[in-house]
Length: 136
Image (cartoon, rainbow, N blue to C red; front, side, top):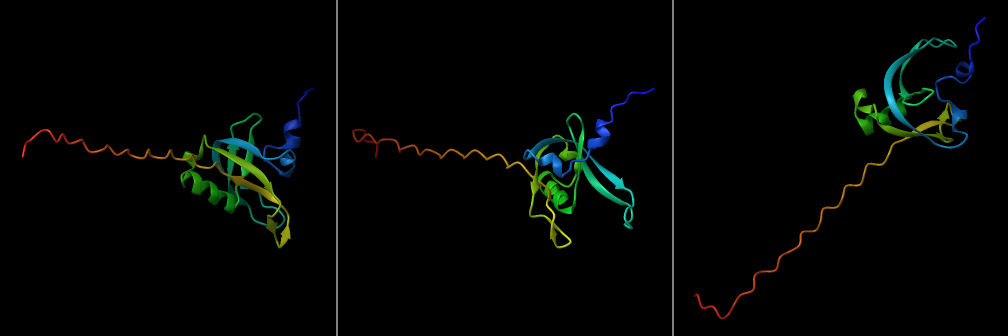
């Protein structure tokens, strides 16, 4: 008789609304893949981009068009550049679907590091002229 732990199957690897009960979550992107979701409720099978985070247990997050556009804007259009980058996920109650406020998970990207201000060049005063020297 096997004695397997089913905890992983109960919680799933994909993030969901309940994961945000204690606030925002910060993750490092471990990989980016296209995932095929089976046809359901009369809708055809669909492919979506998904982030897999570098954490234990591994967690995944499917990108809708809005979140996909945000990540691409921040890290570039090539997914390889996304790996190793940190993002914050948060629950946004203002997300609507079908005209109803349903809430949803959104991405908050880290603010770019402030560029250090260039030092103001100091002006060196003109050399003092020695009036005692006659040279002209």
